[in-house]
Image (cartoon, rainbow, N blue to C red; front, side, top):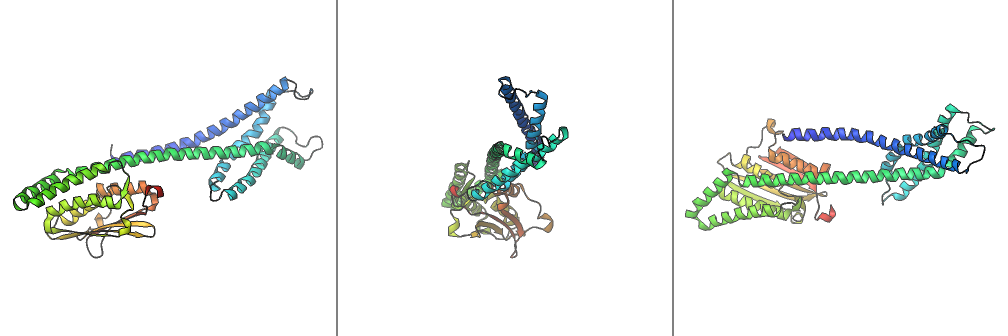
Length: 383
């Protein structure tokens, strides 16, 4: 299965799962209310059996079930507004007092709503103005009598809503972590594939062979850098983010090998602000971008080329850019991304959501530039 098909199936399954959760939510709500109806009816029958009610009062299963349904099914209709209010006025540390007052007021509104609904249903089957009592009196008496159970019901529904929401978030975080782990493994495999690519190894070994007759020290240095590059890639396995300093160490090993291959044709400039070195970046995020610049900006021509890598802190974000002075891209090619850039964009979206930015454009001074901005963080504790 191709990646687009896989992603579309995930999206379709997510939509179906959302619809299924909506129906399941109503099944749970109506099932819980039906359970309360049966419990209250059975409790009343238990009291009637042991003569806990007036002697002239006659128990009727049909009438008791109907009366309980007229009370509890209106509660079911008001559950979605309570859950919405719980999301709108969250009981969080910074504003819990204001939210608690709002929910306390909504408790009385909930009691009034249930009373109005139940009275409307009762009015369809019997007169409410019995024994000379007016409708306002009946409403007020039922409102006061139901207040304790309404208070318990409202806050129980609110608590259950928060519990389900936290559980759902926990499962989503687990799923997201699994996806990130899979994407990290894919990025590491892509980096290893690039490093072990036949052309890469052939060119590297050919350069080493040529240097053995001209510059043995340079040949040894190239072998050492290749070994270090592979070692660093494997050592960072399993890490979603690493300090920029560590990312640059692996990148420098790769660039040293490429500089030996291209000799004077490749110049690299690093413009890294010192305060950004401890900022956390996605593991193996720069290497595929630099590789893309060398492959499309430097390799196709016989002229000398330059790659410039920048890192700066700006407005709470870490801004990274990779620019080459190659031919750039035609307008029709701007929307065509290779696997490396597409994976980079996908990883940034998974890690940072809308808090990141990734741009690919022709540089004003010539060549192509890839810019990205991610939240500036120095340690995992600040995430």
